[in-house]
Amino acid sequence: MHPYLNIAIRAARQAGKIIIHHLEQPDKLTIFEKGMNDLVTQVDKSAEAAIIEIIQKAYPNHGIVGEESGFHPGNEFVWVIDPLDGTMNYVHGFPQFAVSIGIKQRDHLEHGVIYDPISQDLYTATRGTGAYLNNRRIRVTERNSLKGALVGTAFPFHDRQAKPHGVPHLEILQKIFMSGADVRRTGCASLNLAYIAAGRLDGFWESGLKEWDIAAGVLIVREAGGFVSDFNAENGFLESGNIIAGTRKVHQELLDIISIR
Ligand code: IPD
Ligand code: CA
Ligand code: CA
Image (cartoon, rainbow, N blue to C red; front, top):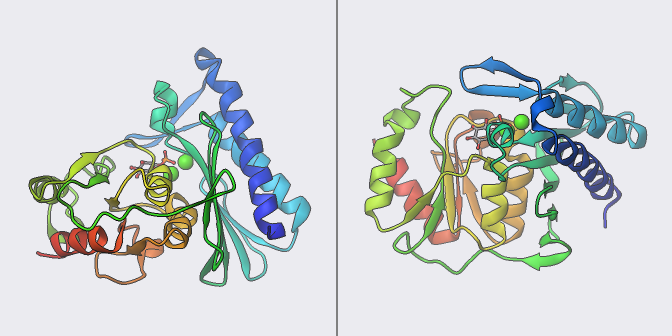
């Protein structure tokens, strides 16, 4: 295993311990509102601090982008961290949240870890070496149509009027639903991507995400044989936050629907 991945796993598990510890004491949780429907707790912050401490001890020269603490400049390696993806779920005790750590070298995703602290499922990938769930190789499904597919998405709750790519989300959702797919909105983008890699979902689309929501998941999906693009069939998802992922055919059908204006 690559030493960077090893450190990322150690950091993700440490963050997971903090997340679970506080889940057992929900009445003691302090919740702040960053923006409309955008919550943060002291758990997000302490999980991120624990991750950063582990990274900086091992690689003091590496750069870091953390959702809660922002950009820490460094060399060409940048660790992209979401210490708790799915905070809304977490504060409700809805068991869909994860730690997500991606590692970029310049603009290339090299390693990714997504850790579900409830199930203790650990999804990992290093570019060119496949994707793994708890050290066992995983692959996307063979699904070759939206008909019968299970697809994840989210609602644009930061901006309910949002029209990603010029069309309201609910119109796109309706078209995808009418194509014969069933749709899940579970509130944890990183786990949606991990589930595609593990063959539990056939596809996923969402708009307006942040780099830390998807950096690890994009690599894990691709290493599991899946396809990922933005809404223009290009690679701009880390910048735009608009992402489509899935098996080759499901990705293509989602793209065909979403890119029609
Ligand atoms: C959120 C989750 C959610 C997605 C939101 C994200 P957070 O991340 O990934 O599934 O729909 O767009 O912001 O704020 O819980 O880390
Ligand atoms: Ca997130
Ligand atoms: Ca988060």
